[in-house]
Length: 109
Image (tube, rainbow, N blue to C red; front, side, top):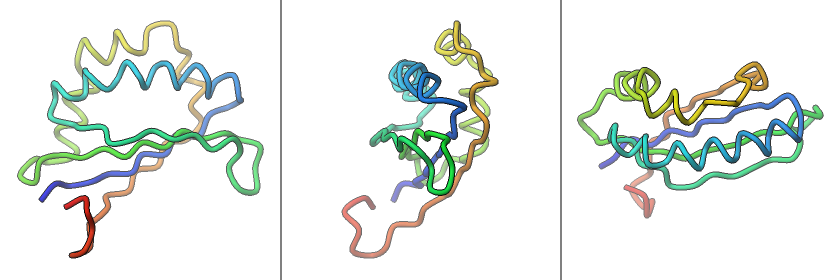
């Protein structure tokens, strides 16, 4: 069984959301090299109660992997630095991470 994580990025503006969508498309192959699989990426035009748009990503890790260790390895990689080149990271105003546990009937087990 895989370990799933929902990652929610809150961006400073709709323009920042558009730019970060492009960054995330670059993240997919680099993350895969670090045993992180991307299952989907979604946008929320404005977070409930705010004007801040969000990008949500569902990723998974191998069952035996340490989630924080795998993520740290990717964040320290040349692939990550290349993906982020030209993007102003201050446009990300918040990152929320939730580890999700599939139920017994979940198709994603």
